[in-house]
Image 1 (cartoon, helix red, strand yellow):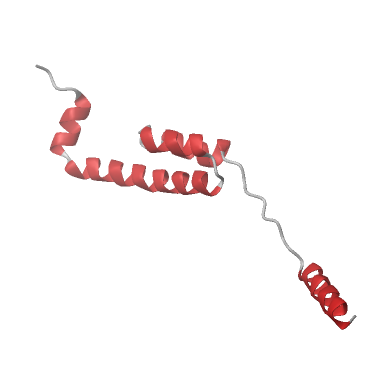
Image 2 (cartoon, rainbow, N blue to C red; image 1 turned 180 degrees about the horizontal axis):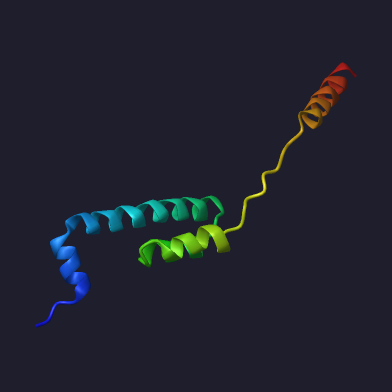
Length: 91
């Protein structure tokens, strides 16, 4: 049996394996968090199952993910509704 170059490299250098795992976990964590926050269940499952050493995760983060738009609620609208309730109770 012949061992491939990758098998020999990882067997002789466990630090390389550790660095690859750490690299992959960091990108996977960021991508999974972003897909969950964006409510993209398909991407979440795909990112969770497929291991590509961070390549798919980086593509998702910078190419495919959509930025969430936050809806701002103005406090003026709330104050008006409170004033209307107080006016009705005075009648």
